[in-house]
Length: 610
Image (cartoon, rainbow, N blue to C red):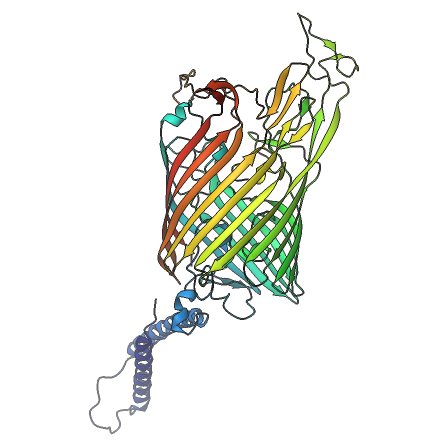
């Protein structure tokens, strides 16, 4: 709201006039002759105490109005002081400095004067300090900035997945599944976010903290029938100390160090600035081929003159498993404890954290990264846990000769090292209006860092862990304008076979083995449970994922982007395929290698706090 300066001037003149009138009235009352003495010419009716009080009340009300208008003018001037004076930079300054943009999966601003996305007013000042915005609260030397956005979004998929705005890419159904015969439409506000960023200065160190959450989780009572009630989900919660000598230490839940940056490495380098490298998709899990994770970690970073960044981190380890045909001779983890974790999810027994190192550099053209990951998996082996017997016997000799089974005799722990390497590059053209990027990450036991959530490990016939070799790759092309952003992504994720042969059973075990049965992947089955909500799983359809591919194209249009926030509309189209490893069963004379696919359209209306 623009303050009317003429109104303030008029109020001041009126106040002065009123004050003068009160003074004259009081003087006249004091000078009135006493005891009926000779008098001056006839005077106006005597002024009473009530008249004087009325004038004083009017003056007080006008003074209060002046004070309020003055405060409003000061707030407006304070905001305008951080905007560039030049008219050519007015659009640049209109981008709000919002920490919650670290969570934004959309284009955050138009490229202006050499920036991929419009930076905040704070960023365009020399030696940019703590980020601030119109909502920033100053408390005992700390700047506290609330943020977030409200989202109204829809998704339509050509084949039903029962999913909200987070697409489960690795669950695309096979041709015979009943879900693949029907489409689905979901509307949701669950991707709405709330955030809080706090920062301050202490001698030679900047201290900051960031917390953000959305509603993309559900409780046992959550439904979309009437109240659409869903639970709050933690996204990030970290604290950072950034020293003047270029060192910084950060701890908490944040984007994993394997996640690609657009500039630097520190987590606050993505807080609404110009270097967010995540896909701008509406889909909350981004695009196939993007390597990422949000988890607990402790990270140390060294900034070498804003040209080279070195970082190392230890992060929470976890594992995902897919295996078939194994005997009950291994234990990799357990369900979550009821007093702390999700009892409906599994947690691996992790013997060590994931160790990650990264180097990022900007030699003058482009941003480049190289990252390495080390992880370790441990399970417990039970060589006598499953004994292959014949006839009616219930026990038999254990393979290692330690007795009869099944039993835990001779059980032991076994560990296997795994990890991977990756590289990324991003280039900006035509004053940063066009961004082109390439990313790749490959190794063994790294499937959980893919957005498709491919499996990390399988299990050998003897019960030991078998890390699955995998690869993730993504190509990025974006165009950024003052009002409109366009984007397209093409990604792939691959998981190799990890099969093994069990001589005791004469069967193949593991992941993607060529003798697994896929003959039933094309045959639909009727429901066997009479609830109306339980489609029957396909019989004789192993269908382990070989590759996920996704092509996405979309746009974001900003109707308004200024000191009152940002209102924008986005839409995207995605074509997704899930190709599986061939197995037994023949289709048109070749080994059965079924494929799932989906066409998906998403729309989003969002309002961001200023």
